[in-house]
Length: 422
Image (cartoon, rainbow, N blue to C red):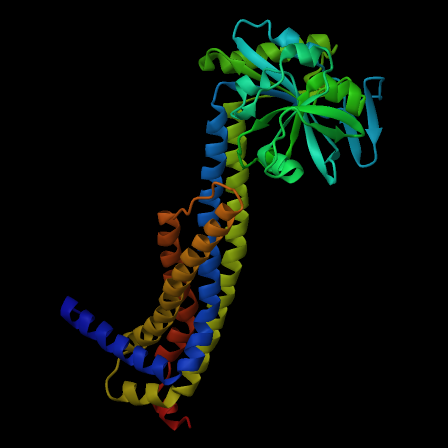
């Protein structure tokens, strides 16, 4: 068969397929619905995954890449509890990380600056306004390292941290909840029953890694430790390095220092984790990719279900049109022509569902972006061109794979037996 004959055959098969699909329009719409749902799910997942990745990259880049974080970690090998750690229902809290550890780490040549942090939760009130909020305790270097900025007033200094001063800096939203449009600087708020003087207000920053710093009160680290929570450990240490190219070797030096200070000889018994920003990004990429693969797999189930639906409908169509197939074969239609007629019908169904699914997926992705942005997240609408291409290929393949069996059944029908079919 030459190219011209092939084009004529495909054109004829296409015209017959369109006529057959229009004849059963309601059934056609219901058949492609499964494909539409599956493709929509795939597009939304890929677009959301790309948006989340960009969001995380933006969050990390706001800190920069020259940072190393140290945080407590449950040892892989269980140890007997000591005076430095205590058990809780459902897990254990490691309390061995101290501010003195940070001071020892700060002596490394490549460490430029650091701050220690602790997070607590208490009732915060001013006059009749009251709310349960998070209290963030950090030493004075926090404002020099973090991307937070002062709007009015000032941040507390290291002398106030050392003296356990009862001063507070408020996030923008917390200030508005407690004071409204009134002046907050030099006013007093109540934290856990004690009075604290407001000395500064932070600029609105928005949610970051599930923490809304605009709704937090910031107090000196030692004030939170001694006056509010009654603890002597820290939740994390955030260090800034001078030369980012030496981050990995600096991280290894930190490991040695902490193992020596914590009397640890076996790395499996480390009660801390040291993470560079490069390592954090690699872990985040692995997590995001894993979530995307899982969600795409779930979306693909809808595509498979839709494909089975197409196979069933095409099988019914073959049964209904047995006489028509016999008549066409008796007039000279070959097995190949009959095969392509039904394959093209199946492909038209899946490609139509794919196109509709892509449009709906893009619209839903745009809607999600608008809603997320309105909630303060830097969620930018992103299109995965590879995802669009994959969706089209998947819908076409499903049409071919699930339409092949009914099409072959139709092509193999005996014309004489088919003409006897009523």
